[in-house]
Structure formats: structure tokens, C-alpha cells
Image (cartoon, rainbow, N blue to C red; front, side, top):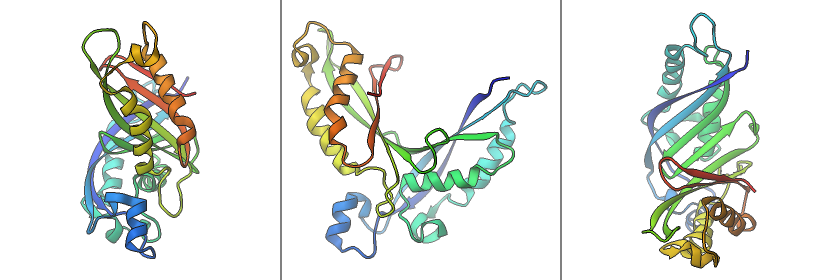
Length: 250
């Protein structure tokens, strides 16, 4: 029987700060921006865990949801309402970025015998940013996804808001704890995407009579792919509405 994927979501709250104590104020500020601000800032994290397994013929389930929830609650209890820098030994020598925290959670969840085979750990700081570790990509890399929004006219009607989810994948930098420089990513997306398309008629930007969502996603990819400073561009997801989105991966 083929394996089936099951995803469970659970929330917890923690605070963290991005800082290298051996760096001076200017270097920390340049590398981490607002995330450097003392004493710390908090997040209501959303943890999404995907596991796989064969469907049990007697229960009809991949795993017992009660067992999965119990394991998740047991794991996140250690991190809930904690200052990750000060309270967690895992971050004594590394910055508690979302990428590093997702990797730590993976190492604690993967050995659990009651949750099937761990496939993905996705950790959302908020609606605009999440980090992800997957079995398919391997634990030597992670991915970070950032959401950006702009309003543009596609077909002559009134403008619609587009949500653009940009995913960058690569190794977690041992010094910064990040896959890519989010500040640099923000700047290049602002210059190459938002300023180009926001409040514009896409037909005029493309100099064509009709622009599809797929064409727009491909154009965004081509605009960004060579300007990612660390990691590599892995996916563009362009959301036109709650019912329609376009993925482009080069």
C-alpha cells in the first residue's frame, strides 16, 4: 500500500534575538536589522508537521491523531513561553533563527516512534515568513519563504492584490543562522518586483494584450534568480485569489 501524508498544526509562543556577541553594534545591526533589537521579540509560532505512513486497515489512519498531538505538545512544551537565547541550551552557540529552530524541532521529532515517518517541519513566524526542513531536501539545507504583496491590473478590470511567496533554499549559515539575508531579499524584491508591478496594468508592463498568472510568475523568477545573495531561488508561488495560485520553479 502506498504511503499517505498527514499534516498537523500546533501553536506555541517564544521570544528570541539575533545577535553575535563578538560583533559590534554596527555589524550586528547591518546583519540582523530589527531582529537585533534588545532585549528580544516574541512570536506566536505556527508549527506544521507532516508525517507519512501506510493507512492502517483497522483504524483507517496513517497515525493516531491523539498520539501525534501528544508528541507535539510534549516537544513544544520545552520551548513554549521561553526566551530561546537565554533558556534553551540548543542556542548557546547558534542564533535561534526560524531555520535553526525548525532544525532543532526536527531532531526532537524524528526519533518519536508514534508519529510515522517525519517528512516536513514548517515553522511560521507569522503569515509573511516561514522556514522549512524536509526529508526530501536533506537536513544539510533548509528553505525560507517570504510573502510580498502588490496590486496590479491583469485583464482590464480593477486591480487585484497578488500575494507572492518567494522561497530560497540553501545551507543554514553557521554564523548568521540564516539561509539567506532577508533584508537583502526584501530590497531586491522591492526593486525588481514591487516597484515594477505595483499599481500597474500588467499588459502595459509586458507590452502584450493579455498576461497570464503563469507568465507573471515566470517574469518574477527571471527578475530575481540572479540576485539572490545566498542560497538559491527555489520557488515562486503567485496567489491571485483564495482559489487560484501559480507555482514556478525555473
